[in-house]
Image (cartoon, rainbow, N blue to C red):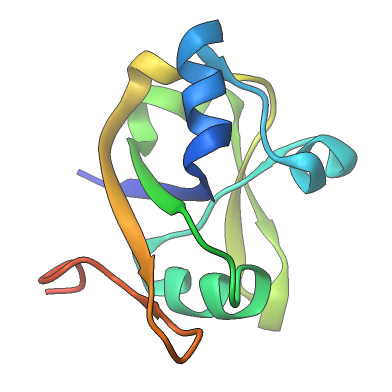
Length: 115
């Protein structure tokens, strides 16, 4: 089972739950797709785009369940990132993890997340 991940604020996701779909963050809407990452890409994504931001969550999706609108496109460092074109139905979320911000401004991933 292949998973892809979205990092967003808890408020964004709470709003999506009410609407039953996630339209994406402000940058996603501007870019025309929802930015996702593989587990391997998450550390760098969080460090680069979410440094110092609080109240974040990581949402996992099974890539096969969203494959119709999922495209793998070259991005940072020549790596291919999953991009979702459209609105993601919240019922497709597999798991949700809290991403805590340490006092040093670095995010602490859930215990055993990368094992």
